[in-house]
Length: 407
Image 1 (tube, rainbow, N blue to C red):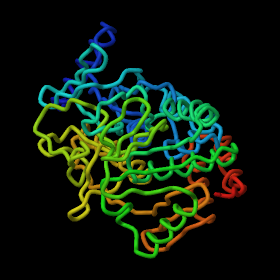
Image 2: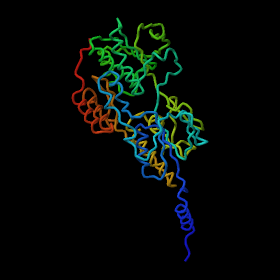
Image 3: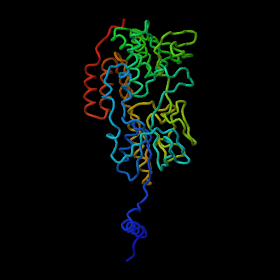
Image 4: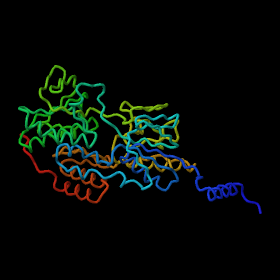
């Protein structure tokens, strides 16, 4: 009887494993950076793949980031925002609580802490962090909103500031989603506390939220003005001494200063022949792999997948399904099968502003006001990992926060 040579080789390996149990077949090693929506979905997609999965994330919990402005304003309890990472990834995923600080794509190594970790396959899904664009004055006194810890800091310090300032003035750099949501959350908190504060948002663009239609844009500007939130276009923060904020020649004394002026890739050092946008996002091919690196993928806020001439916007929905597709494509690479392109489905977006909202469902159906707010909080619960969290967010979506007089 003649046996196929591959069968003979496998028999020899199995025989030696039985005789010498310490000898094992080599597994591939897949490294995932970040336990956000993309990273967790990739872990699940790879759960039945014969690869060692190492997940790097310095946090013990995974956080519902879109609800951070509400935590900062003291409107929702932080406990409904998170759940232990180890509870939401497969049991065999090895979670290392270290932040990746460097990636060497050519050497196929990730640096975390003081250790280099080799990989066979890599998913970069570490998200983004605040980008100060070179501004470096008294950063220890500047408030950001990119982590649960930063939201806690604002929640704890802002009421004390209101109580002690004779003329409280909230100043925010950046009029994007985060800046406007934070401005609304804190403005209405100051009203609820009985100490209404001035709010100034400085933005370098000629127009905030330029993707809105003229009608939507007017609605938001009218609401912000009525709420006591002043938008300064074509302006930048030029100086900060720990107390006073300078906007050109204008000096705003004793300010509570928050920075929401943009974000950048969370991994500061990526070595290799990569293409990056101004915000650090990595250009990816349709299957989410990096050009020239078929075993390296990016997803979520780390990835720039082009939709025509523009990259897909940063959104939970895209991060969720990009992570799933990236995980499946890594599995395909391990099994020497072709990868598949990511096909985005835009479910829509909503910008919540505490008492107002604007958005679109499926990029076509406008939604605003309290219905938009209810959808936002319902979706936060739906994507938020546990029945308890879902029920709490559903309760918030029904009741919302009441109404405050803005003057």
